[in-house]
Length: 498
Ligand code: C2O
Ligand code: CU
Image (cartoon, rainbow, N blue to C red; front, side):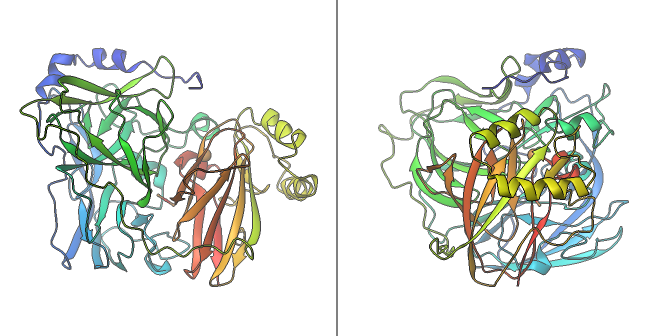
């Protein structure tokens, strides 16, 4: 993994500062189906009530320290919404914060007016107001919800929750875990660091926190049984942190990305790169002869590993051999893009610190055409000539967050589109499209092995990908980096479907 120096104390130092040792962490205990907020299972076809309000939670084990947060229904993560595929969902959102908010249903193909983007699809939901969200859960899978106004602050303060859409016939597993993975930047006394959108964060890797939690718990211990088959639904709710997950040799099968099925396979990389906004469903078979603890670890930054969770194998084997039933999920009803007749578009991301060399390299290797670059340059010049400058980001030479510009591009209803997305920066960017799922056709000119459907595709520094989708959902749809400080700094915009 690429090592980047980031300014932060080591997590171990942080825990020592707070007088929290591993014994205290162990006192957190072993909770079957553990997780805060995840007990809020709801009835189908009922109205779901989601209120955003300030509260306090205990993020660190030991019980001593309360952190003031903003939360949905009083817990971090917020209440788990679980519905069935095809169900009409009605969520009444009640804003009890002191500032305007909204709910965006990340990854769900909702009607445009339900997409929760103030300024683009609805008015901000003012303090004390309610807003009714209604949509049909067309696609099964793992989704999540969060505000889409002042997002770097509102998400960092704890506003996020999971939305699970169950398949009519789910794959058979013994248990299911939903893990919302987050990190927190806290001050000495446990309060959330109130400096949001700091210049360094915006121009570098975004707001990284020192404390990593799963469902609001740092490094939880979770009891599993030998031979048990577990469906693990992972959701990255961090503002900015990309995790490189090491599953301690357990080699789970990836069965869905961003909610949509992929051919079940064990990823062939030693760690699984998991960026903000993304979801991944794994089927994990605990070996029938396993014993002891398995430490799941984030290894994105060399020397700054984060423990994520400990799976403790306990009890009698569930079965003598690894389960043999199928792991394949049924396809979602996604429209297949017509690649022959598709419209071609380009998105070129530039800016941030140290981006100049990457852009030059991509031009020299012919990945960026001279003609297109010329257009981008003149756009950038008319926007103050800050194409590779100090810490702002641009899409095709413009800064859409700062300017009243129209859509990045417009598509006819039902039109297929192939977009070449180029990351001409020195940083990772998870690029998220609202209201649609796209196929990732290729990366750096090589067809992807699984042609996976995603709504949030991670691009490494200097990486170029081709994505394809059908614009079958009319409206204006955000297309932005899900590192929220990058979005704030200009990696944003929207497309229009007639
Ligand atoms: Cu998860 Cu535009 O957002
Ligand atoms: Cu980014």
